[in-house]
Image (cartoon, rainbow, N blue to C red):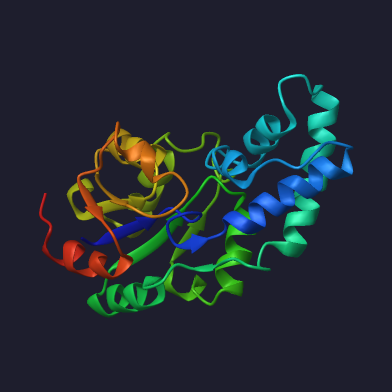
Length: 217
């Protein structure tokens, strides 16, 4: 594999607690009760606007959701690294892939600025030649525009490219772009991989350098 593209939340980093606490701080600020972490986690993956729309409930007005989103983004910016850390094995796997000469990038539905700041703050930003977020293009994952852009930027062909993620959104993004997918069995939404299986499943990111070195189109 010449190009390895990663999802961020639930794949490279365990960010559930900080996301849940930011969502619940937003709800409390608007006079609502906190939600269980499992409920909030089930809303993650399609970008901050969708997360907050779901978290505020179906009866929330557009104005309320807009106010909630602004508060959430402000709160999360200040607290997104309180508890968030790379999953075990991630840093070692990134270093091994770097030594193998693989080009690596992040493609997430989290806002780009937050994604870049998070990777930098956790010390993993240096491994990626590009970090794209949910507001980097007109369409979010599973639209293939992000993968197509990354392939074009580094001159990789579909058979030389793989998308790594923890949810069906990442698998569908890979399929839509005509590239292979690798799913992780941990993370935020691995249960969604049962109905949308990736080409390969791994239990630890430490397995990734082996597969990317040996997988062929």
